[in-house]
Length: 245
Image (tube, rainbow, N blue to C red):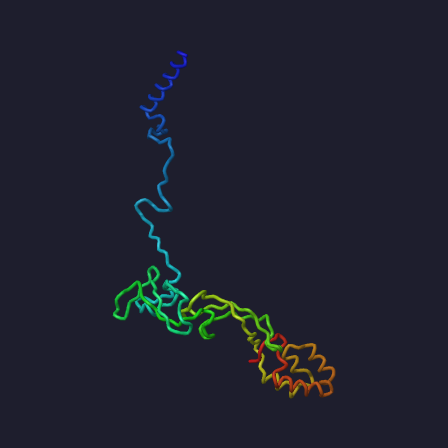
């Protein structure tokens, strides 16, 4: 036991001597300069250089839609946060309390800057606004010339200046309404003049019917007369299912 105590005291004394000499914290390099043995702290933090702070400017995405120094009540919905609620009478004017978003500047009628204000709008949900106040995605994967007329489900979004309740993006049932560039007048003229050779059907992209009329001489004239009538009333249209121009 006495031997172990002597060894412990010797080790403790050796550590104290090392601390006084600085061996545990630093050493001398080949050129005689004192070097640190411990962990070296980075000279920069988060990519910044000491003495040169980085100017980080974050441009908020909605600011491009917000006019500067305009009337607060005329700002688009993307520029403000409003306490909207459905406790209003549908179709009637209703007032709501709003606050401008960060970095948005606007004024009242007296050109005084303000942060909180009221807006007045018609009480209605976004999916209830008229077609002139929303925009929908069109599709070319449906046929317009069809009975009954075909429809599709489209994703629609209220226009930027329209104030309304609920989600600004919604779904609507839309009738197929697109055109491939075919003219009704051209199709009718071809049917009258060159219908016996299937020119009208070829123009509309209906190659099988066109070949049938060509080799049968317009069904001996009967098919030609029928096509003139069907194209004239718009019953026969382009093969891609689009509308005439």
